[in-house]
Amino acid sequence: MTTIIGVEKNDGSLLMADSRVTDDAGKIFSHPKMVKISERGAFLIAGAGEVLPCDIAQHAWQPPRVLARDKQDLYHFMVSKVMPSLRRCLKENGYNFDEAGDNRFQFLIAVGGELFEVDDDLGISKSDTGFYGVGSGSSYALGALEAGADPEQAMDIASKLTAFTARPYMHKFQSK
Image (cartoon, rainbow, N blue to C red):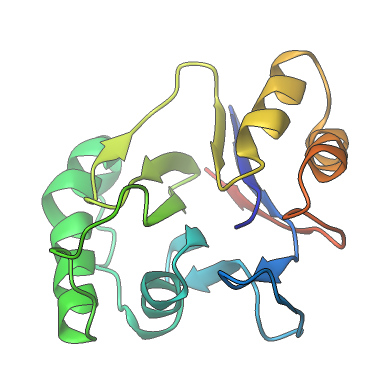
């Protein structure tokens, strides 16, 4: 899978992702166009898991515009406008939500400097610690963050503990 972490601070949010892409048979893919963090308008989107929903969200989806009133409650905006828009786009582009499977994909989405964790039913979660993680190595990286590691150190720790995480790391910051 992958390792993606997010750190939410007072001045904005940082997303960091590894560069290892694998298929179900363990084959490793690498190419500079295969990035795990994309900018779509006012959004940063990082995806882990099945490639199809990640590709659709990061390359085909046109997220809704963030209006001044939406910035007052970004959680509500994500639930009421962003997730319905993403669901429509995924369905229109061939993603089947009815197929069996758990944790088929996960996203970290930053908007307005806030982070949101999105699971494969498009449910939204927020963390009171300010730390977020998706992908197979995220639990290692989250543990390292909680223990005081900086994001790069946390990714290095995850890369030592899972074969599905590797340098180089990509990072993007979105200010509030």
